[in-house]
Image (cartoon, rainbow, N blue to C red; front, side, top):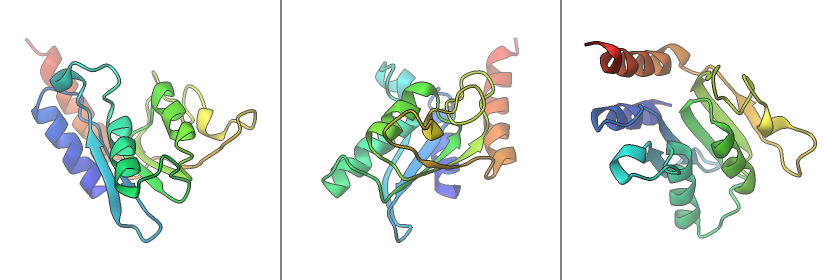
Length: 145
């Protein structure tokens, strides 16, 4: 989570919502990482999770990440939850809950939906205060005159 938080800070410093993500293999080694790049790349799909999943798939030369863990600073949205399921990620660990758009337990729970062909283990609230503080500071700065 420390590396994901560092990536989130970097995203915020570049004008993107401060969200960072890493993908680790079974040994805990980082095999992919990403941060929000929507503003920088003008790409609506460039969420931290998608960027990290793409990097991991390239590094591992496989789209199937079933033995991997995705660590992200904010609960994945439904788009990212869909990408996580398509990549068959086995475990998702996230920091702050997203009560407005979360797809991993708050608004929706796509990652554990038994109607879908794949489910992921989900652990939420890891270093939640640190992740939430980054988001709060980012949006407070945008809202102040």
